[in-house]
Length: 89
Image (cartoon, rainbow, N blue to C red):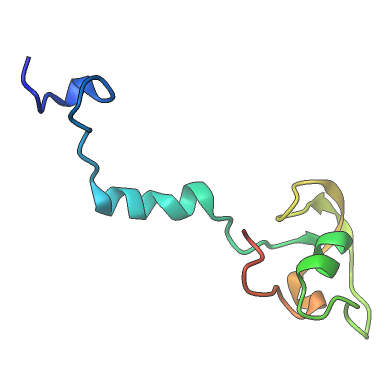
């Protein structure tokens, strides 16, 4: 068997080659969440630029929070001044 045989990944001394372009393209979809459409009140207070919420009120409905995944009352991220940088880490 050849040293560079791709079917032998993880077996022996030669590591499997990684296609860097494919890795970078898939990294975001696997490890980073997309900007949420809806967020719950606790996540808005934790990750929002305006944790006290919208001074004019917000319209809530029951749906899944785009950050924590809980099904509860949610609103748009803009009601918390949008999300702070690093919210998805």
